[in-house]
Image 1 (cartoon, rainbow, N blue to C red):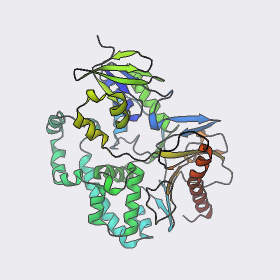
Image 2: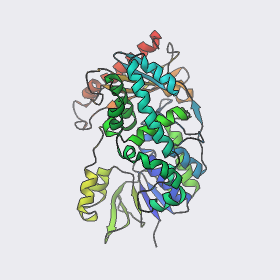
Image 3: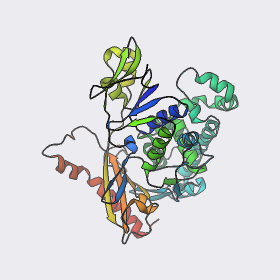
Length: 420
């Protein structure tokens, strides 16, 4: 007898979606999470009455029935929902050359870009139109219908063949990067930097490392769906997925560290916990990183050498430094909720500290902070290496966080001047 039909390691968004969907279709499923709270990079935490998001801060299409957002589709399947607060504009990008308000409406967005680069705005329009063609073609195939094995083929051929016909002329685009489309359509250096920035904000990588369907999805949803913030922050999304998991009979164990995925004769048989407990299941889904899965959870003998080599060759995005602040709201009327600050145009946007992201969710949801206060979440790329706690840890933290404080000052000064 197996203890479960499937075990999911990690309660990040991916792990919770996989587990809750399995539970919805009557599979006995267990989620094991090392942390004491679920959510992975999307978890939230509270300090002194302030409620902070730890990871994602920009959301779109969570409640729109017409949205292509796969998370919204999952909520529908689980019969769960969340409350959201729509807002406008999306936020502001702050460059040394000036600040750019970001609008969902494509015309308004292009008009603001034209104030910086008139010809570049025309090139950007062509770039976005090509992406929207791809977005519309992809809309016909729900993301929840996709799978990574050969059984995807009969699903597509029997249920979604009209959409497949639309996609055939776009095969090259689907397999390519956003950078390839940019090279074809955009010459203006300022707009190329803008596209790189938007790809970076979406994927953590610039245009040539971001697949075209990913940026097509962002452009399409931004212009065709609802920009909104979940009431309660990212934890509202996590809570909805946990509710869906448990509603349909799935289990979540927190503070449960998986030490090993058990494999016998090439087949998964379950997991071993750090405390020595064995839990049996014929299917184990790892929501841990590729590197942890292949180097810590699985032994060399458990995976073909070529498979391990391919997996471990996956490029890693740098880690992030996060700054969470609770501040007084007095004198900060008229704030917008999202800001991206690029300190130096002559330095690559992926250089740690040069591009800083700022989210002020209390602009929309005032319950995330005590009355008369704002909660701020700011973050920037920062290599993980060298951050072991030691004698100079606090000093290094003060030094490396200065770019975030400067970005906050810059965004406030621009807000205060009313320049946008």
